[in-house]
Image (cartoon, one colour):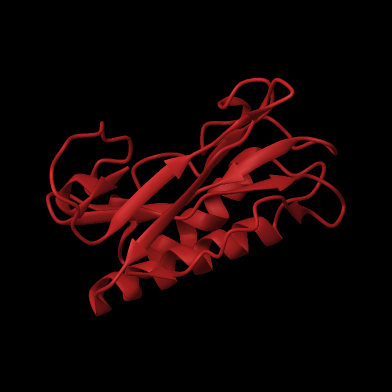
Length: 162
C-alpha cells in the first residue's frame, strides 16, 4: 500500500506515514498453490479522476486485445499508446503486465521487449499505470484468462472514491 507522493513509486515499501490521496493497494492471495494479483487505487480529487480515466481506458483496450496467438508485446503497445496519446507516456514506467500461476510473476511479460505469444489457458495481469514523480501515481490491475473471448478473473470495482 502506498499513498500520496509515495504512490508515485510503482512498488513502494510500506511505512507508518499517515495516508493521503490517492491510496494505491496491491494485493493477492494463494489458493491451492496458485497466486493472484490485483491493484486498486482509491481516489478523491478531480485531478486524480482525470488520470484514473486514462488508465482505465488503456486497461480496457489492452484487455480487449487479449486472445490466443497475440504477441505479449502487442498488449503492452495497446495500453502504452493510449497513455501516450494523453501525453503521459513518460509516466508509464513499467510493463503492462505479467503471467500469474504458481508464482505471482511468471512469463509471459506483457512488455515491449517480449517476443512471447499468448496461449489459451494462460492467466496474465493487465496493469497500466501513470506515476507523476513526487506527486502521485496510480494503476489498475486485473487478472485475465486468455481464451478466445478473454475473461477478467478479478471482480472488485475498479473505481473507488474515498
